[in-house]
Amino acid sequence: MRLFVGLGNPGAKYANNRHNIGFAVVDEIARRHGFAPWRRRFQGETSEGTLERERVVLLKPTTYMNESGRAVQEAANFFKLGVGEIIVFQDELELPAAKVRVKVGGGIAGHNGLRSISSHIGNDYRRVRLGIGHPGVKELVHSHVLSDFAKSDRPWVEALCEAVADNAGLLATNHDSSFQNKVHLALQSKGFFDKGDDGAA
Image 1 (cartoon, rainbow, N blue to C red):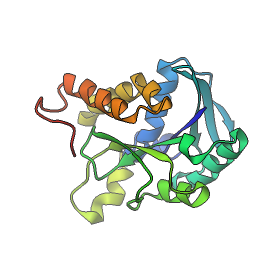
Image 2: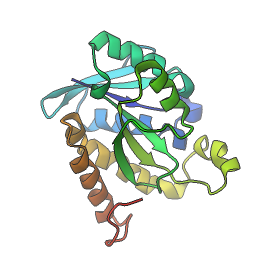
Image 3: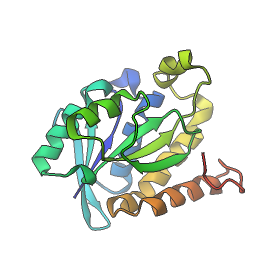
Image 4: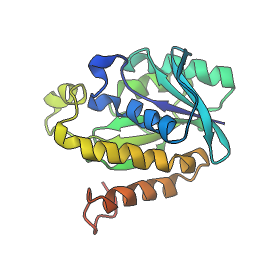
């Protein structure tokens, strides 16, 4: 069994923020794979389904980003999951737009959602880092992540969510490198990267 956690802030005000791309990805996984309707529990919303014969629970914490760990810990305790069975989908400033990286553990780089999760369950969960680009100046970071994607961003955001959802079964079965490669190739085929781009950030 796997717990897929999408990070974001609840409510219509934040729905299209860059910070909410984790919510967007798990919503797309639920849509594309016919998961059960969302329901409120664990200080969040959950939807259950199967990917590659692996039971998967999707979780969107509704605690606001900086308290995400409370919801993750509650769900993990209920399902008796180890930290290695938890995959977190997060926005990543340090990656260019539409780039995706999967890693286990590591630093939190000022991400309040990751800080909260690490404080509640430890640091060795898997992170799917979804590149949103950096505004270039540290002082603009806060407004960058909490502002909506521009209209011109929508094509790659939608393509990224679709590619992640299409290949989510690889994450559920621990084929992280294959997942990363297939997502990159899917976006490259739609013209979001140059053909010579190997996916390195």
